[in-house]
View 1 (cartoon, one colour):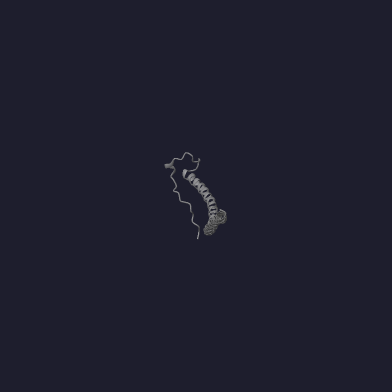
View 2: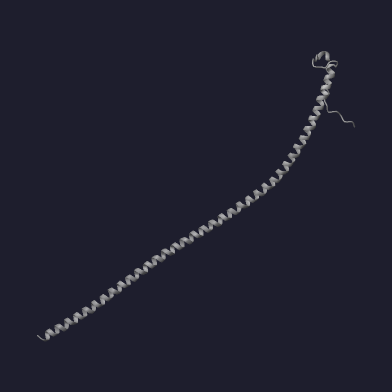
Length: 167
């Protein structure tokens, strides 16, 4: 089939009605108009061809960009998955860290209580030793006091008997 022209048909204007002053001499206004229309039509076809080429280049660029966006989307999905995994790992580490901190805090409290108990036990032990020493000294003094009282009593009795006897 023959190819149809895509050029719009333009009605020819009657030169008597138009009065074109720019028309070249010896040619009718309609003939000049047809020549100008042909020139414009060729220029329009050249313009359409160049625009089609540019449009095709733009379409190829859009296709390339869409492909790159697809790759970027896949990369973003991978990053989102990785970030999600990192969030889970951070939550686990936070839990472990809190558990360790709690355990260390409890151990420090236990050490503190032990230290206080040892200090108090040591102090009580020293106080007991001091009291034992003081009690021992008191007991020794009491013993020697009793011995002295017994001796004084014996001496007094012996002295009283001697005085009674020699009197």
